[in-house]
Image 1 (cartoon, one colour):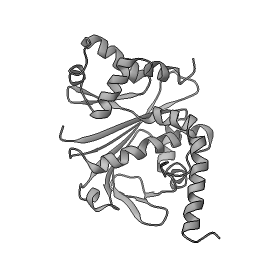
Image 2: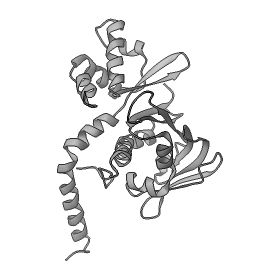
Image 3: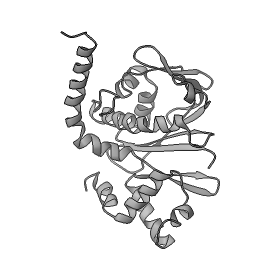
Image 4: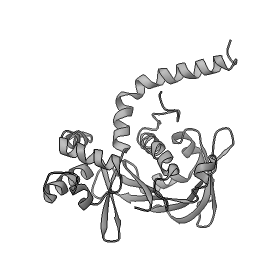
Length: 107
Length: 155
């Protein structure tokens, strides 16, 4: 299995994307807080969170007896770099050149 | 929640020792941190500074804990923006765990950046930077080359 397969599988499910949206809106939520926004059993939400954690899209931290869930943007950054950074680089180079010209360092 | 916290996790194919050295060696830091210089003795109580390419101090603080190659805790304060500086000290923890039973060897790096203040501008500001820095660090350790050479965002 390719190392990015769990990531794409995790993103393929609308409920899991909803969970990521909820964490994006407010990071560091408990399972109980997340349950309030979703019309699903606690058990299935736990399963979805496990899939997200296995794909490294969600990171958890303990605070006393509570388990807090955080959106981890690092794997998404890697997707961005994989397909976008190639197109980004010439644009950044062009912008740098424009900046230098406007600032009068290049004739 | 009276606190602002962001957590970033990345898995890197390397050893805990190599990752620790990547996090604490200025010449290496510069390669994945967009040219920033980082100065410290990396011992509990030693000063810590992050310096822009043009020499201005970006952030400053103190090493609170250093347990190589497992845990590094930095007291971290913004220095370049008055509003963010006024928020005071944040804490940044780097935790390195070896991933058991995988070949080639891999480690889990967790970075937790927090401040005792809700809706922190400083934590919001660093949160855009960390994914880029950590993803760059991963590429550099795994392939010997950083993907992003500049910290600038595309428009």
